[in-house]
Amino acid sequence: MTLRRLAFRLAPDADLRAAIVAACRKRGSRSASIATCVGSLRSARIRFAGAEEIMSLDGPLEIVSLVGTVAVDGAHLHIAVADAEGRVRGGHLAFGSPVFTTAEVVVLDDSSVAFVRAHDARTGYRELAVRSRLPMRRRRISR
Image (cartoon, rainbow, N blue to C red):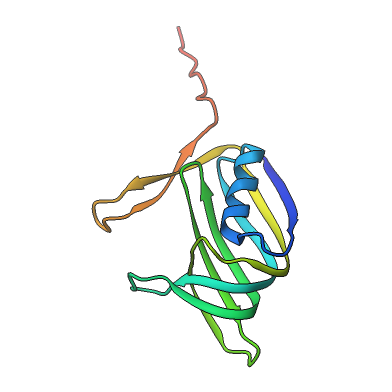
């Protein structure tokens, strides 16, 4: 297994989700996971657990956590943000969450696997599937 690190800083007004996905694609990442992210958002678009609609939270908001995976065909990112009173809200990060002052992001990529999204009949959603990228070893045949 070979882990590669991708670290970058996002400037004000960058869309957090779009910029992370774009950075992973530009790097050719096929199995990215968020190692850390700190910074702030001007506002956040989040889908809360079990909800259908995406909610908009006005900021500024501190990013207190960002976790998830970026597959070749989609990302699954969860965020927690705190407002000026310290109230924390979290859920699925949607597109359209602009950086306020900065976002410092570190992503890890495991080159031995590829993350893909595959339909799961049990959940009805496209869920993470991990595919090996390592060549299969040839078995020796004894004679």
